[in-house]
Length: 283
Image 1: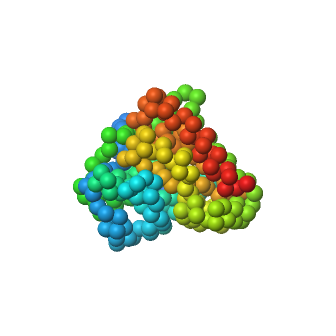
Image 2: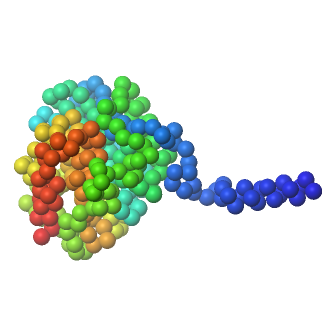
Image 3: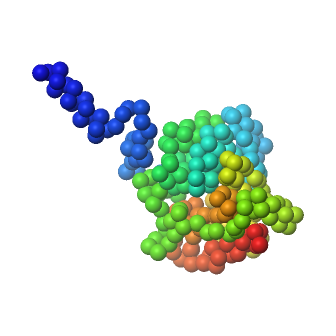
């Protein structure tokens, strides 16, 4: 009888929890961040671009591009195989890269927090093991990093929007349509390719581009804070015969979670200008 009861208990447990070899559903595995705020950036003492690049490469990262979003400031865009594999999933291309902003003027560095942005961008495909490993790696390479004042609730990141009526991650802007090959050709041809910062193939049907904005449009980072200027260059996902970008109202807000309504109103023309800039690429 005891054996029968034990078998019944095991069957019930399996019905409620599923087989142990199956992939847990999103949110079912504990991460340690539940119910807590998580920093947007990891900030530390100044390291010059060349030294930072060498440290990242020694740790197995690929340097994708080095971009200058503001005077005396550089965005180091980097990735690895694990990040690219996650970003190759449908509609997840924007999660392929990490960013380091080296501020030669203020003598500071600031990393995008891999867990923060992946939780927002990967949505139901968020794999904590992969992205937390990036966070741990960065902290090993640069051991003096501190959490930024910019923070948001970890639990709310996948459903983030600035306020009611503002866009979510899924509300991306389509800036071009056509075959993937045609879209890539236009991106490479526009202004003789001078605005393209990088091109990263993620799969046979998915490519991520880093793209510069016009000088006038990109000035918004000076107005609302150069400390987060690493959000540039903008990324464009080429997949499913479309070129799509994160809605600027979403991307700026999630990159500047301390942004006030007044500050947002001060750059109210920027989201439209971003789309206008990038649509020109694919005409």
